[in-house]
Length: 416
Image (cartoon, rainbow, N blue to C red; front, side):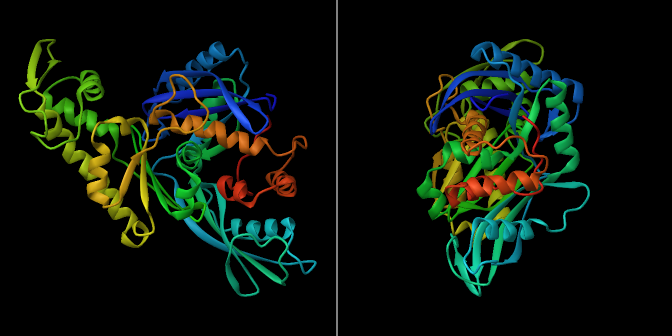
């Protein structure tokens, strides 16, 4: 696949979405997209390889039809409760007395060489800050004079089996994976503003199987975790509470759902549903809030507990995105639980008809992420991750790009 086109592939528990973009200058333009119902996936992990591969193949085929581009390689998102985030520190000597990109590379590589169990794989090692001869909290040490450079990085790892199975689905569908990208990191490229990244922002991606949380501060990711409760649990609650099928519950949730308390502007309103035996029933719309509100509160209370007050207090705003973020009043519930300003994260990149909602944040973010990576001057295919990192570091024009992508040793770079 040439560098002219970039493809983002979001393999979720509810849907598989592929976005094709044409790269031009410093920007991108969406030229096609494909979507298919997800099958064989649960909570971000493959549970049926054949079914998942078929879903990926269908989404890619639709993206090829709408774009006219033959897709051979993709940037694929990976997320879920198996993803872990931890901090690591490494150091390197400053060889010529003045910090170069090569010195920064060696310091980060040292930090990235942390002990990773055999059943886990390093996705990203994102630089947080540097210290030079004891002087800490340095953002950009390039050109500074000193002897010993230390790097503090945020390492993101995933279960090796989950990564291998995701790669297997893509390979079975006829495409290679250029890079497996942490889902919230990809989504952040589409929905977060630079000022928010600097000041402190909480990205909350409420999908179907999991709710993924990522905290950004000082321009880079500082913490991430996942909650195994999300949109599918809302659907299940409706199915049980209203005594309807899951398919009917999913329809009702999208068309009539809301997370307001009972009686909040819905007095007297009714909705029609199809029961388990096909019978048509009329029920008060207030039931929707009574069923959905407690589950929304549970999700966000688990989020708050998992984050903890010290980290929460570093955030000035929370951005709610993902397929389940469209539920009316969910942002108000989140605001009440966290006590900070909340906005819905709509993709802010190039306009893409039909992809404007928060459900497409990760797919569009992958496209923008890939464009940042491929904007670096090409140097051919490199045989190892370390060699690719070295060339990329030498061509790097902005330290912030490094912090945003974290392309470091340990990432699986596949030939494109």
